[in-house]
Amino acid sequence: MFDPVEKLKEFIRQPSVSTDPKAGAGMKGAQEFMSGLLGSIGFKVEVAKTDMHPLILASRDGDKSWPHVLIYGHYDVQPADPLNLWKTPAFEPTIVGNRIYGRGAADNKGPLMTIIAAVAQLLEDNPKLPLRITFLIEGEEEMGSPSFPKFLEQYSSRLKEADFVFLCDTALPNETQVVITAGLRGLALLDVVVTGPKGDLHSGLHGGVLRNPIQALAEIIATLHTLDGRVNVPGFYDDVLDVHPWEREELKKLGAKEEDYKKFLGIDEFYPTPGFTPFESLRFQPTLEFNGIGGGYQGEGTKTVIPSKAFAKISCRLVPNQQPDKIKKLVMDAIRARTPKGVTVEFVDQHKGEPYVVVPPGRSNTPKDQSPVLAKAFRATEQAVTEVWGRPPLFLREGGSVPIIAEIKRVTGLDSVMMGLFLPEDNLHAPNESFNLDVMKKGTETVRRMLLGLAKS
Image (cartoon, rainbow, N blue to C red; front, side, top):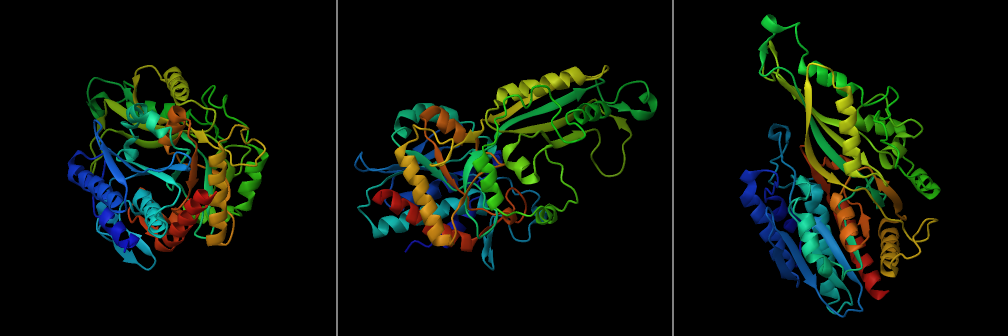
């Protein structure tokens, strides 16, 4: 008997932190656990080696006329730090009420296990189901999937045999409303480093005669937004596509309240892009954010020093039709032009990802050449959600990013059906991450019905 909760506990116990070189045993354990699990439900499993963490390809073959779904997920997780803020051990799954706590519970081990449970139940009940299924599970999603492009190029002809991609690595607004994600923002990440003197200096002996790199950095980054919240980089918005009316109407159906969102965030004022509501800005507009800043002494007490260097980490979330490389250049050019005399500036290029959008069938801008199997998959998902959750899903863009989805589209031409399963309160990437087991149960039944409906179609 396949017990998805017990299997999820085993999965969470593997400390599979892809960015930590010391977590090799946890990464290996998670990969071997997942490979063994898929093999145990009848899949032919192949482990594709990379320069870092291997990918898992597990397939159920069949007649070429059958629909073919490519299911994506990842077995790596974010670091658990700071550990002192966890109420339960990060890698010892703990159930409290209807939630299971542990790093990776919601991103992406819980949603991935939900899909696997649905497939296991479906094939146990229908061993001759006319549906081809391929699992593609990577171990580098939380570090920008550096091995994924090379893997895609090597395996593209095989992956192109699928009709579409299915995944559950996106969000639900609440536990009663399912969202099928129709778009993801892209990413452009970089660090800016400002350098002044050749070494740290005593602030009493040398203060007042040179520009402090921390001050220079603060002056630079303060120019990157206007007072009303727009990104103040020439050309930043040039390629942004207009929002289609059906998308705004779909967002209104969500019924989200701005005051409730303020309380959830713990703020008393929004700072959206001018001309857009907070919810529109979150899903339809690009951003430039500061994710980290540093320079000088960071310890307890004081140390009167003028630092040699200061840095800031910058991320831009991008929307269709923006290009990451172009945006990085625009931002770097703006910073160079605004760097004051007395300091120099350099950049550390970080990872990137293209924005992605897919249009559900029947909308005003649905492509005329949309794959008929993709259209059937959307309709089967919509029907399954409506039956299980008691209300139809909403088709919305999401503020987050899953960069490899656009990369899969670029290389293979495959579009994706993305059904959200994690909630805002699941604390992704933060201490006390958890996954709602009621959502898992309903999600399992939804995916089971969706795949069954696709096979019958």
